[in-house]
Length: 529
Image (tube, rainbow, N blue to C red; front, side, top):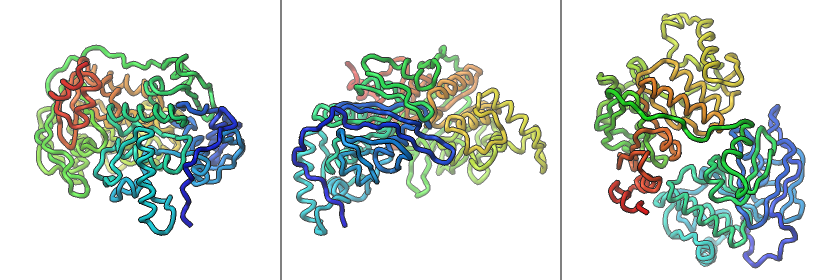
């Protein structure tokens, strides 16, 4: 039986000021106590932020509210009435919708078809689409969420696709909307547009729960914020009465330096040159289109851009993981041959180290022990035996040294890598690559999914390498991170470098416009106050 879309008639006045009340929520996954006696109240008609380090339990808590998980114990109240939410369909029927970080849309369907999918009025699709079109127009007008209902999903921007996800939830009658890291795939302008939509939703009486790790967004958009740490609710604050430093300290349990502390760069000779690089993806689609760039000793060059604009293929080609169609890569004056299965090994031998974007699938073998991952790719080095037989004790000693230097926790080189947190897995990769003292370091998404405390540490290590005279090419979808770390910023759009910016003088708006494909000169004019 097809689920029925909730009727849109005006609901009776709520009996409680609280849209959502969670009391003593507990959830275990084996030995891991993900949520420990969590209490949370979300006031109706507000934007409520939830922050916490990676693994703090915030996504688990929201998954319980949305019916993906069932709590081991505790109480959920919706509009003041206790509810036992069995699945996401039940949550929707209670007026709770969720927009996931990775959109759940059928790319070759239209906007209208995606909105209706799973909420048809009957087996006859035409009448359902006709009624849905009228309802969609009403919702778009009421909440300023304009999207062409006949546009095909794969033909519209990521920001527009996110609007479709919100429309889906509203069409199904959502009164409380959960958004999980909603700006991770958006340009700054698209993020600003999203915030305006969320403010309109709040002003129209909807309740928004925002899961994010970006403290700037918490301060800009939320009315209140709840901080979680190690599965527990630490504190709920009124946003206007707090500041990023206090929130960060509550998240980590200690004071955290939120800015990148660095001096001016002192660039030397060029250590990395990329000339006219053309690279295709696994399907043969050209993703890098005649890209040229250079990085000098003692500088960090950041590549800014919305995910999916060729950055991944660029890094994979430069580091020998993906063949290029044409173009050259020069390290320390020597042209590299990167084609073939051993291209990455030749790049390492030339003095190029690589921290890949996806640590779990490209940087680690998570079933290996920590010490095994600590030498991965360098196992033939003389210090580990240099021959057919591995000096295991030497490898474990080196791993123990790296653990100490990079503050990997727990300090156990015999632990399976899968059992380390995301931030500590990232430290294992960084320790391995930085520990080889490379001339050139390629870093992709250095702090993706990493705790705020680990972010501070990782940023300091990258700056230290720059100050030691290394050339660093950095790719991140976090514009704040690029602007804080980079000495020069290159902006990629649709596989091309569309502009270069000085992080000391270029505004976020100017860089964001280039990220959306606007030329550098036009972006500079449009971004002027």
